[in-house]
Length: 459
Ligand SMILES: [Cu+2]
Image 1: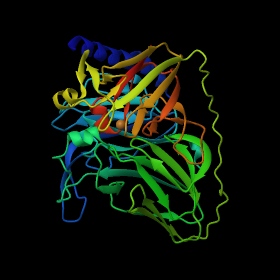
Image 2 (image 1 turned 60 degrees about the vertical axis):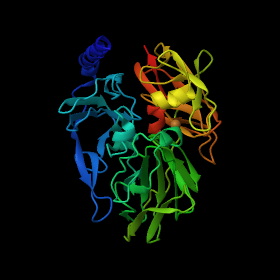
Image 3 (image 1 turned 135 degrees about the horizontal axis):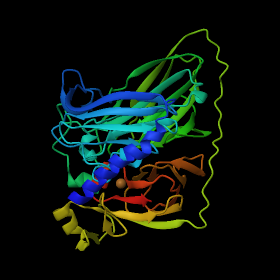
């Protein structure tokens, strides 16, 4: 392990010197942020205070913003009592900056600093979050929005990030720490919460301009809850999925799984307010309200339209990898391999706390799924052979998937996180043009820690 870690360290360092430097041409603006992970306090409800982990004492962490072509530099400091790291979710990143402990960097130890530095090569709605024991650190609040703008697309007069989280609080409105590591959660849907926040608040209100083209950037930062949003508008125009602009389509409401992002657009009319609801449960929850400021302004930007120039990679000579997902409660995983030893499901659950497998093998950050040459095409042939939905995330890439997630679209979308229903079979198509070791895992964070994880290596 030491030698491998030493090797990784050398690799990281080598990358910075040999690969990053040329990108740092003088015409690139460097956008600098200081982020500190700390133990902090937060009040979910008046007169109550909870212990949390936050970046810069903010819930959510600061919105990191920049333009395509900028270089992001984050001076990160770990003031927690435990190691951590930051993953930049959805970014086609330099591998050494991807933030996966042991795979792409050493964990950042308490008191240590780490500089994350990478170019913004594509625009869109992203987020950053802790990737060390993320089932705990994300649940305690270590995340924030990341918005990359393309000045050519700056036609929106109202733009709001809507970061949603599903917290599990106890009777004192504190984070329920007793249930961290619950085998019940890990083997079922994951850590499902009981307190929905939007940008850290309970049903907040935002004031926006009337008669103006509006863009909302939704992010689901929940550990495990698949959220569904509806509104008082008749239809919502979906314009972006996981940061990538799509040919706009309409939905009455939309589903957003852990890790995913959805961008919507509409023109505010003469209503005085627009209400959004979270409608995944029988009882809809008030999510947030947009109060519309009356102005005399007449907008000429009434319609948003766009056609992406995506090219589906040719899969004739693709490397196909089969991913048979099994495990969890009420599943059909009777035995699986862990560290090369085959064990029955009961022993795996009770002795190792492992519950999920790819191809009858319990996954980990050391589980290599496939190694390919640069610019090969990979087809992930994935089968969710379990009784639970899974929000499958690939680091460092967007993949093409023929999406069943929206009622009104059955076409290829570019996603970095795809919600697979129980029994669903799907294919994720990727042109492997970004070298490095890239994690592939379920973003229900309790499923990832208990085995639903592996990585691909692109030479
Ligand atoms: Cu899962």
